[in-house]
Image 1: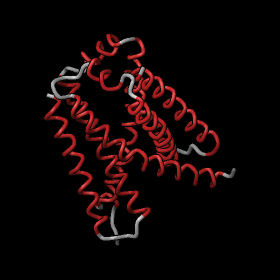
Image 2: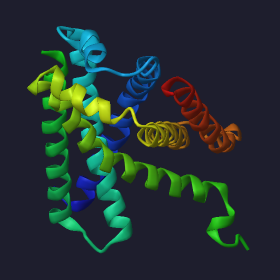
Image 3: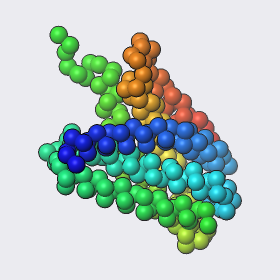
Length: 113
Length: 113
């Protein structure tokens, strides 16, 4: 795949992940604002998420979308701010996305199991 | 002559999008790692949450809420500019993004303390 084609895929992934995340971010913000009322405890968080298929799906989707979006976004910033280009940069972005998905997957498992 | 970029609101919207995005990308791995503490049991997560009870941490969290909201609202503006036919109301989205982000931050601030 040429660099230009990769750029187009990256841009598409960035915009699609943004569209997926918009409602998820609203849910996340509303949940946070409600959850911090009266203090935040692990018990309160886990009571909501443990054993919940719905929260598992929502957060997994959030993790994948945020990982793709963040990795591509950081790649864009690197291209704008530095001279880094090409396959090396794209592989670094892939590495960041993989790291985020790994950490996010652990986080979802942690609160859902 | 158009003049220096910094005299234009869309320039500051661009800067805000980049800065908030990088800040959120730096915060995200820490956030996911903390939630992953739940894998070690409720007490591990709770131990960390006790640390977040401090006023300075809560203020930092308000900042994070503002960053997330401004990035999302700014992103929705970008999506509308890129995917919808241009309309004059899209110029107002910059101010609305700022206002919305501060509103979200205020809501969180009122509930976290």
